[in-house]
Amino acid sequence: MFRRLYWVSESVDLDGKSRVLGVYTSIPDLVRYGMRTPGSGELRLTLTQLDSERETLGTWTSSNFDSLEEAMQPYVRTEEFTPDQVKSLLEALDRTSVTA
Image (cartoon, rainbow, N blue to C red; front, side):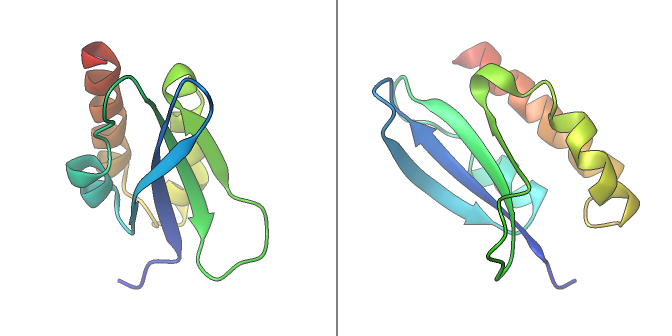
């Protein structure tokens, strides 16, 4: 499946400097590779559309992943993501926040 949406995973330091950890075209790859923040950095995830000059579709940080599940529902309806993929992302974020 051709992916129209991309996840950008970043580590954000306490002073606000960010470092891109990777760009991922699927939730499974994001969960597998893009959620490891070095040191005490906060994880920031951004959902963006391929080749678009529009604003990002959403940005979430470790301190505020609460709205992510609801924000993913339009993309579940369009079958860009499956309910199981969203569930696995939320579970991985829960594990990340517990170990951080």
